[in-house]
Amino acid sequence: MIAEYSNAKAPAKRERTRQDALHAGGDLIHAVRQMKGRLETERGEGELFHIDDQIIPPFHFSKRLSVRVPYRWRASQSADWKYGQLTFVYDFSPQPDYTQLSSTRKPSAVQVARDLESRLHEEWERLKMHALLSLREFFRKGGDGDAVPELFAVRQSRHGGGLNNFSCNFWQPG
Image 1 (spheres, one colour):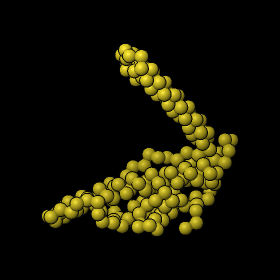
Image 2 (cartoon, rainbow, N blue to C red):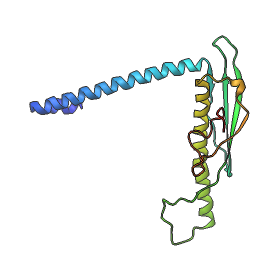
Image 3 (cartoon, one colour):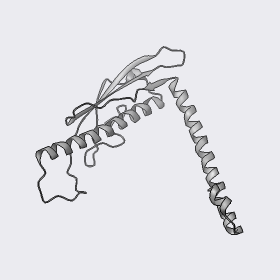
Image 4 (cartoon, rainbow, N blue to C red):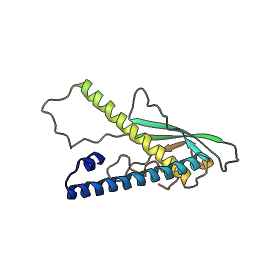
């Protein structure tokens, strides 16, 4: 933007590139303010709860996926930390993918196994993200860590199965 503005010779182009640069600068200022606000929010939340998001995937996957999320919380900044963990369990049932063209050749057993492993890994990653977001939302809404269960069976979407944004919300009635 700045380079275009400095290289512009015609007054009309110079004014247009100046406006573009000012607009981009305004966007940058807005983005920095948002990041500062988010940092302050997360810093305040960090005084009351922390969710460990460094979760390592299993070496092998099965159709019964699980994600264990460790966390700590306290009722106030002066209270002692309490520790817990919540395990989300999800029975994955793969649906056929109709968006891909079917090959005229039948895939080998090795390829089928590799594709299933890949789909299970992707689904595990989705489950992990939903689990982390759900637990964070629970604590952000003022949830009590003592009310968190140790095990939660993930609810599949009513519309075709699979995970949705509410699948891991353990505090909401099913």
